[in-house]
Length: 94
Image (cartoon, rainbow, N blue to C red; front, side, top):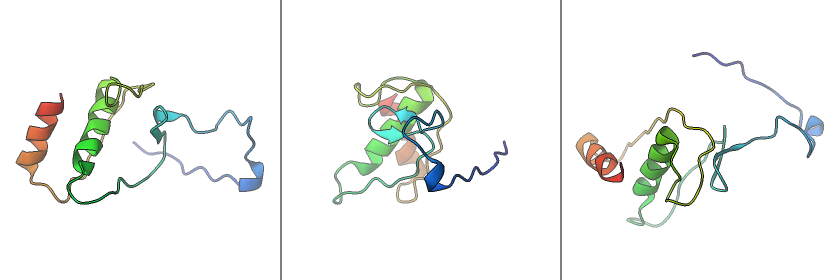
């Protein structure tokens, strides 16, 4: 899938702009937003990332609370965890 990069001048963005970002996960993660989940070691960052991915893929509320307006594909880049560990965590979350 190829998408065109849309460039918008900051001066052209208004509060009533209908192209304003919507939520991927309401009040938690904006659609089209990039970001980082950070925190102290062993504070469940990996689990949270997988929970967000499962919520987006399934369309079910993230953490049982934050609505996912539209289900879609989720890509997880788990650089620090072994693939089997990621699979087991996903199985547990699902």
